[in-house]
Image (cartoon, rainbow, N blue to C red; front, side):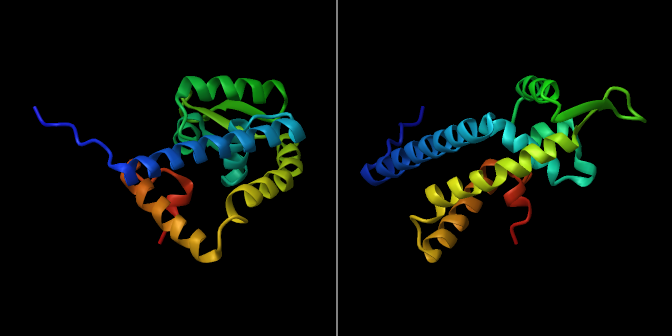
Length: 162
């Protein structure tokens, strides 16, 4: 049995800074979207990923991979988005086992209305505190971590890294 390699003081400080920053940033983005657009951040991300896809459509499997969600959690979220009229689901024309989620025109309008406030909150909380040099270094650090965590490069921001 190997001995545990405990985090040293600098590693522990880095880990906790990352942990708290991630949590607080996600909470700030969620609060802003709930307040201004009546949707959680997770729903915004689903709408945004659909909006960037050809025909504003993705299979539920592909959408789950892109937003890093379990199929059951994504299905629950898409149920809610479908009830709101922002997404519709259909069966794939050649494979009835496959379900396709499509962003509706109403969903696109909701996303377009939510985007300016969301971008302002991202900018305020993530980019404004950093210099351009710090932001670029941070991006490279995040890309390194993404490749380590997601070797298939399923994360949208890692896919276009190059």
